[in-house]
Length: 168
Image (cartoon, rainbow, N blue to C red):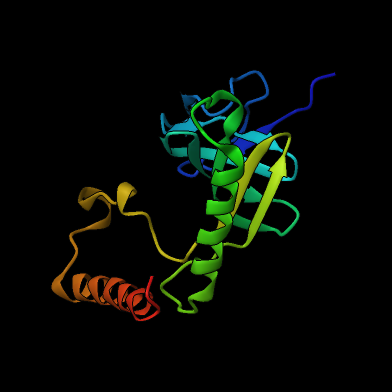
């Protein structure tokens, strides 16, 4: 018996059975037409939306059921990446995580977990408050005023300054 897999449309709140759909392939909500992605699962992690891919790494938005947090995940699937030296790459990832986690600042998101699940390297960062600029639409959210732009730029600048101060 196949496990029932559901997702919720963020626009119309419809509960949708996505058990028969291929994971992470876009589909339209039958109720409102909003574009969604069927989630994929790996261990206690659920990947809801692909964000991008570079080399052997893919990034996703999703949910960590063990820690009960929404997160951004970076997955390194080295089985299909013949040009990668996996031990060197794993050491580099560990080094980058240590550097990032040494920075303590509210505008810098730490790494909250790293696992190897079924040969896939998974790095997790909790989702930060706010919204994604990639999903920002002036027609829906209104135009950013000068005060909002200044606030955003100030937070980015302070985060970059903190990293620079720590020689990152």
